[in-house]
Image (tube, rainbow, N blue to C red; front, side, top):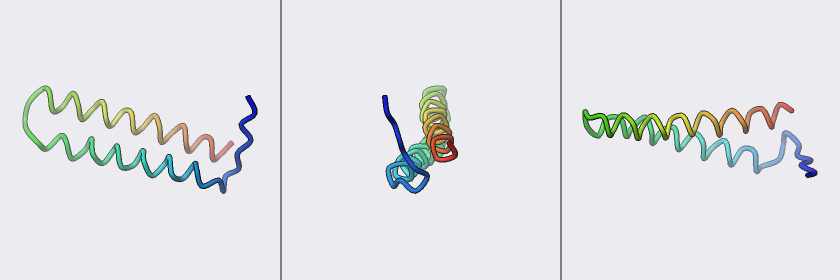
Length: 62
């Protein structure tokens, strides 16, 4: 697997932007209601966004 990417590759920043949007959706979804379901779904979105963003940042730094 030859994944030669540079820090200036636009794909990295597009993925980072998508991760930020997923995280924002998770944060705003928390305020839809006060129940276990809303908290669970928002936490899943938020954790997914964190993982995607960290992988993207570490790819840029590498």
